[in-house]
Length: 128
Image 1: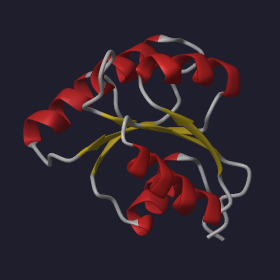
Image 2: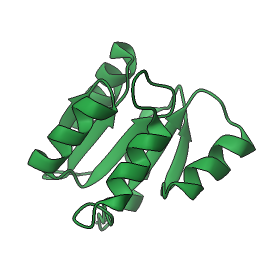
Image 3: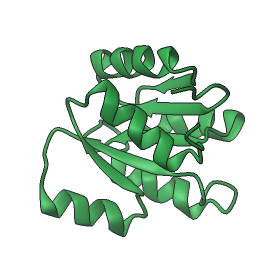
Image 4: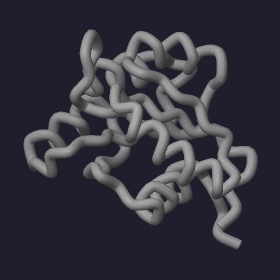
């Protein structure tokens, strides 16, 4: 699977999650942008315009729902796919994610395959 040229942002307060996602995505050819929380991410998103954004739900300062809502409210970013990350696989979390405009919901810990599939599906990649 070649995802060369795709910019993917990972927003998570866990260094372990950020690192594993970065490794998986870099191996697939993605350019990976990392952020520790929503505030950190919003500045970087405007500068780098990622193709796909993964955002953790439970973060200090600005949680994943608030971060997703802010991304989706920005006309320049509204069409950017946002995938929520959570260690809980709850119906309520999924519904709340949809309400703020998220495009998908991925349960942590994710596998390399589930991460790559989500990027492929939402990043507009044509399977060769």
